[in-house]
Image (cartoon, rainbow, N blue to C red):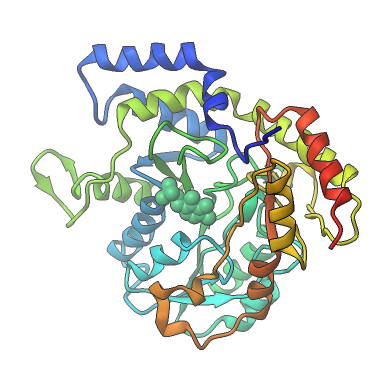
Length: 368
Ligand SMILES: *Cc1c(COP(=O)(O)O)cnc(C)c1O
């Protein structure tokens, strides 16, 4: 018996015929960059998020970097401005800030939700604070009502990192439609994954959308006329075509992930394993199913010895990374505790319920 963490091959096999057909269509079109597939995907994804615009870019990191960059070009941010970001996140959220010579202010999460704690945001605000970059970690929306309240009171920009949360919603409002803008990743392992790298920004702001369309394309709207010193960060036609095939199936896949998560939450009752919590069903799309365990490394080895692959999201907090060695004296105790205790169990749209039951039984039989 062997249960993989995420079986990407079987996920894409579900749509094999449609994917091959879409790929053939692009090959035969003779048009491979900035064409009709991208235009359609941008329209489809904007509609899915209920936003006025979606702008395709090369990956999720670029979606975040370019949005902050666009705000600099538009005079809304300047170098050394402070951007509040959770201390427990994938490093990309923080890289986007430092890549723009802005200053990340790391703020502790709530240990129950794993997401940034709005009370800690309030405490971190100074007169240099210009933006908040909340992350919808593991697929669960951050506490956006509270965060938007703070942002509105303090006149701060909000850039959501929605790379793990396509389709998560709360109070009828979906990830990507809360902040001034939102960055998405379509990395193959994300809930909506391309067959390579891809990303997008959603926003209701026309001026921002327009600036982003230029920035991703050498700073140019019109060939050989450059308004900005932009970059090359485009979403290829082939990847847009793959995403056009997969987007209509996203909600079914989310529904299946919820079924798996519910089974884990009902079935695992080992007091040594702390289960994840949600605000309500719609607020979580279960990109990963993360439990906490003081004996995490032993639990991971025990599951591996029994054929179950698990991952750790993430083993080293950003402030302890060599990349940010200037922060190595800083201490964020909640983040550090999370990083030392979390373990992600297998979850995905093609994981069989009988395998879910096997994982549940193994977890319940684990003794420290
Ligand atoms: C995956 C991810 C990103 C970056 O996306 P890429 O497409 O890999 O560049 C950013 N933030 C978070 C939280 C992510 O999980």
